[in-house]
Length: 239
Image (cartoon, rainbow, N blue to C red; front, side):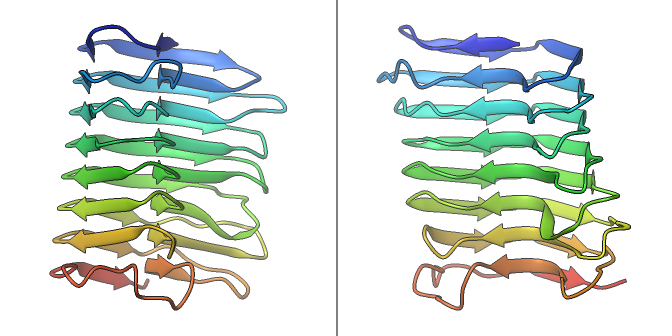
């Protein structure tokens, strides 16, 4: 695991992190919140693969960022082969704090949970002032025994102040033996103001019980935080 807290500037680039195995929480790169400065932080061109939390299992994350330095860029990074056997969350990139954080041209695929109470996110944005997601590719997220209404999300926006989602591609085609199973190519809370433009969101997953497989999900019918600048998205859900 690579953890960074601060300094005059930072760059975590061109690294290969693979085959991290254990029975607890696993994080590949953690840009923590202990130091938040006025300089740029860059995570670029890394390869993260083969992180497996087994036994009782724990949360598994490729890149975690809670830092609120002035500008943070996470780009050109490939994240694949993350899994957990616990009732935990598997996430490619997790943004839990930001001033102006950009996710650009990352490729996230082959993430899985094998627990009925587990969940999978390609990209999770839960907090921050401004997060911008551009040209990211997400696919092959699976949870074959999940029993929940929405355990798989290509992009999952649960909080923050403003989130921009531009030119991303998400493709889901998941199944589960759980009695209740749904999924979302993108799921968006009504809390942050979101601008969603020029994306491709395709969800060909199956669904069970009262759940739904959807291209775009909103947490409520509130549309005041859905920017009028949102447009030109290709949405498809079906089998």
